[in-house]
Amino acid sequence: MNGHLLSGPEPDPARDAGHEQAPPRVGFFTDTSVCIGCKACEVACKEWNAIPEDGREMALSGMSYDNTQGLGASTWRHVAFIEQTVPAPDPAPVPAPDGRTELPLADGAPSDVRWLMSSDVCKHCTHAACLDVCPTGSLFRTEFGTVVVQDDICNGCGYCVPACPYGVIEQRPEDGRAFKCTLCYDRLGAGQEPACAKACPTESIQFGPLDELRERAALRVDQLHEAGVADARLYGHDPDDGVGGDGAFFLLLDEPEVYGLPPDPVVTTRDLPAMWKHAGAAALSLAGGVALSFGLSALGRGGRSGGRR
Image 1 (cartoon, helix red, strand yellow):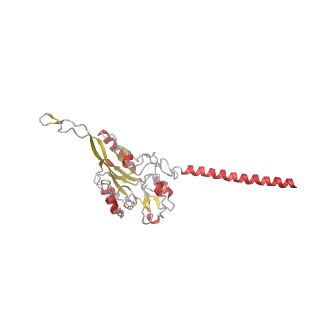
Image 2 (image 1 turned 90 degrees about the vertical axis):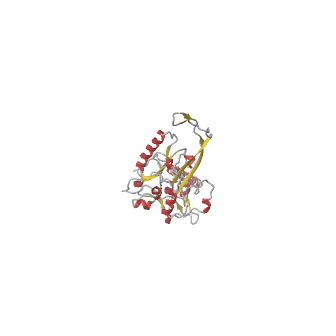
Image 3 (image 1 turned 120 degrees about the horizontal axis):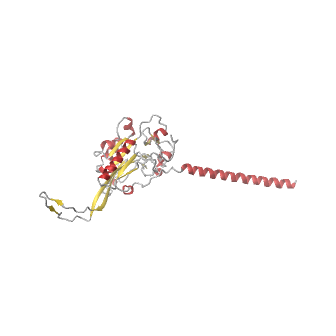
């Protein structure tokens, strides 16, 4: 094992957290190319986890069909609706049934509109800074490799909120406690898949062993490239990235920033060992300087008293 590393490749975070008989790590693969924006995942998540509603002001946000706007303490699944203006395809001749060629009646508009829809969720990072900074143990690593908040022992300190490189965790204003996706930990313990994946009608959200999902995702990207979708790419799947790979990763059809995702996330506690090392060296240097000053002062006093005798 890697001994509780804060960064770098980590093949088995559950065993590193103390789960000696851990099952294979599980997670989510979200294929945004087949997401239809139905929000079934949002509804299923709220129903199963008894998450409170987001308020009527969210329903009239003015953000197109995106009435929840982002992940938060009461939104553990968020379906984003991204409207893009793209160049229209060149009008092509249409073959007629009798072998003659008919041209389109219109030349086509100079631009077209497409929707990018994606169901976002907590990434359940391999190196989870939220877990590293939690002072009460409210955040913990499960035997499935996921990261869960125990809200009953959360003291509302809020350290986890700025620690998350994805901006996933939020505190509820009523009592300050932090909440986020648990990847339906209670359902996993009963041998069931998470509610959002169960409810997804297009299998945009896929659940299973993480290694298997990564293989499936790579094949899907190859399939899309062969079909001419050159912009298809994976996000969060690489164990060598800044968070050691995500337990919930995505197939995107554009740059991560378009979906509101950081292009190169890094675990915010990565540099803690170096910072403590430098702080320790500075403290030792300061202590040595103080001791030296006292020693020189004592020698000076001793020399003056000897001269008077």
